[in-house]
Length: 366
Image 1 (cartoon, one colour):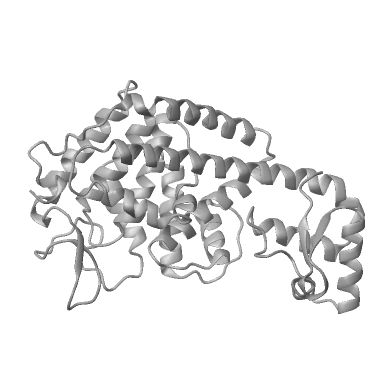
Image 2 (cartoon, one colour; image 1 turned 90 degrees about the vertical axis):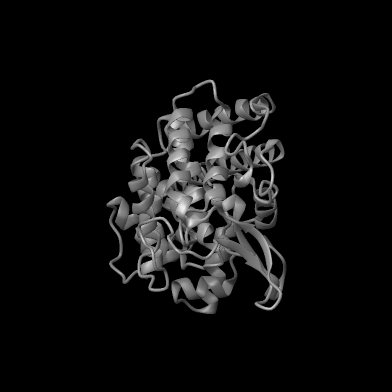
């Protein structure tokens, strides 16, 4: 036996769910915090929250696969698929595809998980692709589905998935397991979501897009258990620690005992919740911020402050510079300097560095 799916007991994963109970407690508490925090948002900011989190997930889940997407295009596409007002700009096919899938996961979280659900997600993701033979269906090619690194002369095979001819049978087993465990409230949600991801990734049923669909499945599993969209930021967290993520998955390539993987992924989900809580807090800060400063700032200053908030909790990389201010407002050096000094005096911004290294940041202590 070489791969886990060749094990005689496959797919009976071995683990102790009691190890997950402390994490499950934190998970439930964080879920409540997210719901409670969202209730404090005005309707406009609730829409902003959806766009922010879904956009960041679309960007991050693509980045994990080495695909860099333009934030403005993604946000416009997310808004469009949510039925919100947007700028009608031409959106690249790949951006539209991943955005449509993210919105579908959010809006249709309560719909049953079926083969057709997965096929539709795959069609969305493969939007505009000409290099993928089987779109909207499981892979059918005879050659092995392998995860390989290195050059053609000396490849290293990290993993080989079940052969294409057995994928439909494997996916039937996966969907039966999913729908059975979904209804089993004694089975911890973190175990359910985590093994959902692992089970799917081991089968690797599609020619391409397995990673992005597998991460979407975590969101669906959690949302169906909570009976509401979870709005977690899983891909955003994974994108910051890709090596650890892939190492965790690879640790399950050859054995059914997944205790270490479960512990790693449970902590990952909790980190993703904490990130979402920060985003909600950031939007609450935005409301308080403009309530305090709206009457004190001019149109140029308002435009720049709104742009800073649009950058999300990460803000401008390295902070806002005077050059950024001039570019955003189209104003002169003197006016930019005067506007920034006014924002400092009213404590809307704080300053770091000196001379050319001077940078400005939102004052979050208001």
